[in-house]
Image 1: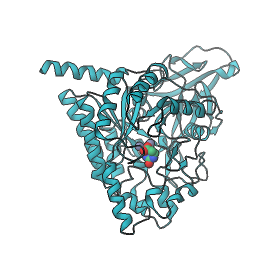
Image 2: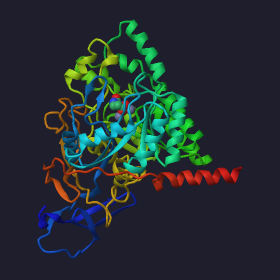
Image 3: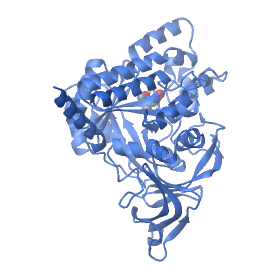
Image 4: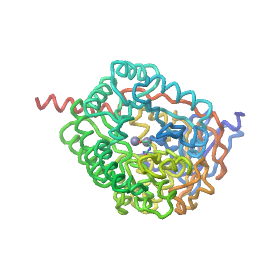
Length: 489
Ligand code: URP
Ligand code: ZN
Ligand code: ZN
């Protein structure tokens, strides 16, 4: 980058962090925030961006994507280039993807595979969670190597996808215990996979083969039961737990209940993530007369058939009963979805969201008056940075932080459409949604990658960001829990 491009002054904006909204200027040099304040003195030749009437917010962090993911006999169509380019277009400047091994496969091997796939392609920074789909001494050792030498601090377990990713309760116990020993965060996909498999068999036997079968095989109590069970198991080993993609009211209530018990009794902390899809769509779409439209909305856990779930979930986010919004971007083409033409259990699960996550949260949260702009920053960026231990490098506007910044125009509108989105997938579950709030400038590590609304993302500009263990934000709560327990005994 030339020097003059290296220096940017964002003037007259409303600078938003989780605890403040301040009128002021931000000066960036060499990819880092150098000054925040008013009447800043900056070198000649500095590029000026006028942010009058706009918010200056930390770049979004999407804690949940699946780019180039091999899953259910298909590979997601958004690769690390298209996926991160689309992320930037929507105001997200870091993603955390998942390297998930098959049962029996080495965790290190799958981690290396993802590093090779992503490095050189990503337009913005990225981190990785690693899946744990089986248990052995080797897995135990590899978890430690990943934490100590490869910048991993989070491991995802699955209580669904019986026979390929699912682990049982005793394995969950061992994995959570290991996460706690290493100072990592346990992530869990909470659904009761054994009951889902039984119900799917019953439905297929009764001749129900279409996308509606997906939802019918996964009633909401099945998600809620698993959320409660995962929280109880994690609590037994005092391990911090992060429940991914909470989709229904009962599951969100179960999470909120576990959080309140944890804070009242001094148990290990619990965090809940919901999805842009759950806030901006609903399970009625899976009953659509067009097979592909319905199949394009198949995700696990399913979108709630209760159309009031979206407003319920956004309220829980505003009240800190849920903490983050991910996209779970896991996109399959029409041809790939058609693998399940005659059997809903074979429809590859996943929806889009990496590009539209910020807009959907703004529209449903801030524009609708349910949450303020500081909470918007918390649920789209800062909480992920804190939990995955990259704060304050990421997730805030402060001197010394990476210059991952969005100038957000709260007045401008756009209409979401597959015709104009930047993702490789040909369908968009938010098609036609009018969103107030548009990222006018997106600065990624000091480079203007959306410039007055024009996308200028650069392949390979992003890099892998290690996530160190023992996040203070997470483990401070574990320490407090231990003190409370000792005081009681
Ligand atoms: O349906 C989903 N959620 N697909 C992606 C894989 C996962 O479980 O996160
Ligand atoms: Zn999952
Ligand atoms: Zn996922």
